[in-house]
Image 1 (spheres, rainbow, N blue to C red):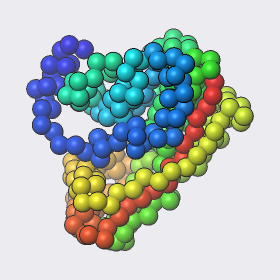
Image 2 (image 1 turned 90 degrees about the vertical axis):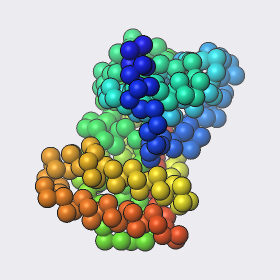
Image 3 (image 1 turned 90 degrees about the horizontal axis):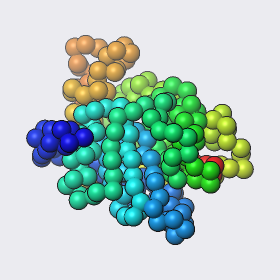
Image 4 (image 1 turned 30 degrees about the vertical axis):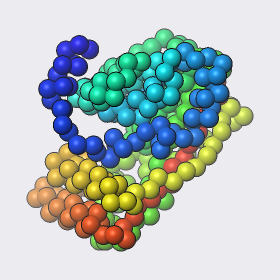
Length: 275
């Protein structure tokens, strides 16, 4: 990790925050925090696994929440792990580690963690219950598996620009399960949990302030004009190579961001599985 840390400082010193990096435990895992507080009161050295940790902002806020515990963030993308490490160093967080690995083959022994968490991961993968099964495997008896996923069919956006409607269809096409949020309980049962072990809740994620709109728009425009979303959409045949569809959607997001009356919201499903 030492070489990765040095590389991250050189590669990402001034990268602006993106849509994923305004996520924190407070705004993206609030449903888990009361349980985490309760666990912390009986054991202040909790071990927490954040699956699909991305650039690490949620992981980092978990590490702040359990200062005497330890957080491990895992992701497949080596470049984004370097970004996560740089974010942790910038925040001065020491009780955290990021490493590469797959949701479906977590590189840890059985019953390693007190809590295993994921956010906006299962919506993108096939057979998501297998990811939950792995999270259950590495969680200690008496521990918690937590997952929060969007339900894309509940998205509400204003103004309803044609380019944004086209974007909605594109995203529904690239997601493995656009209705993930409402299916979390069924996936938990497929993963081997009993219904009595699973607590379900729903919450809303929204973007409406100028800062939120600007970050949301810039992130999505970057993805449409040259990011992984564009690459995946082309691979799946959901857009044309000439780029006209992508540019129409990007310009719609820029128009949306500049509108004082603009807003975006989506319902998210949340589960806590007591092992």
